[in-house]
Amino acid sequence: MDQIAAMRAFVRVVEAGTFTRAADLLDMPKPTLTKLVQQLESHLRTQLLNRTTRRVGVTPDGAAYYERAVALLNDLDELDGSMARSQASPQGRLRVDVGTALALHVIIPALADFHERYPDIQIDLGVSDRPVDLIGENVDVAIRGGELLDPTLIARRIAEIELITCATPDYLARHGEPQHPRELENGHRGVNFFSPRTGRSFPFSFARGNEYYEFSPPHMLSVNDSLAYVASGLAGLGIAQLPVFLVQDQLKAGTLRHILPDWKCETVVIYVVYSPNRHLSSRLRVFVDWIAETFSTSPVLRGR
Image (cartoon, rainbow, N blue to C red; front, side, top):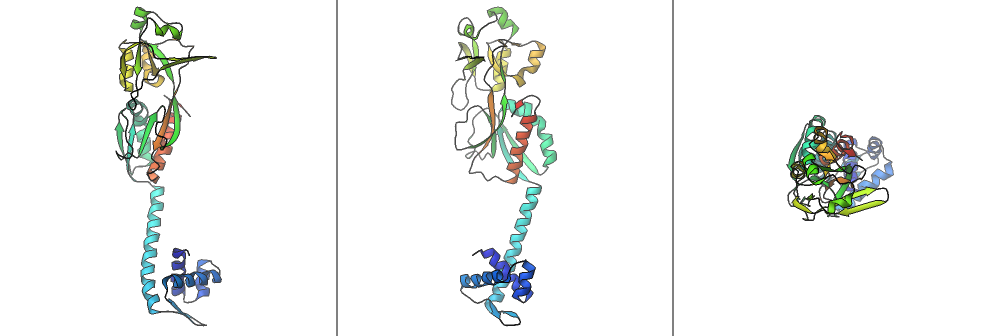
């Protein structure tokens, strides 16, 4: 038995006075209406209505049940209405976690557009490259790059970040400009980037046609923050494979040079992730859609 449907049928019969009139008001076949009321009486183990050939009366138990049922159905209708309004205009707090570089260069510059669309959503933005526990830290959604180590998370692929191999003119003047990736293993040093989650260093990668090389060059410094990684490359501490969107100005100014331009680096895939245990509220849904749109149209990223 659909108890809510049965309650609505009973209430309409009481208010209409007859099964025929109630069925017309509900746009429901009379036999269906009758069966619903009978099922409700059977479920409650009491008679709610006195039926006659001309009119339907309410028993004392039916009158008491009618008062409670009307109040309950009104509350339910109000709840449905409030949820519909929430869907049309989402509101509330949303805890978002993102790495520093993406926060500063992509998300924060675009947030005015989000707040213009959804003025009643409050964003609490956690900005760092450290790993976060979405459940333990009460984070609704995170934007992460690279390999996803937690297969239980729901992930939506939103962009790819292009990397290029760079060095400062001063470094190249001292060590020479390599013409092949293998030269980086001798006579050169790199700046490594290690995962804030696992501590594992990410190797350099080079691809050209059918050739592919992946290795970690000798290094004096390894960092786990994207902005520190760029700063280390700019300080001339070694060769680095840097996100294009972070070094466009430096490339134009000549403080960094793109080396080995015929060799492509692997891209970094960006995901928006949230826990499957996290209720997909309207505010979370619209944020996920907005962040995917923002990354796909960002002038500083190559989005997918």
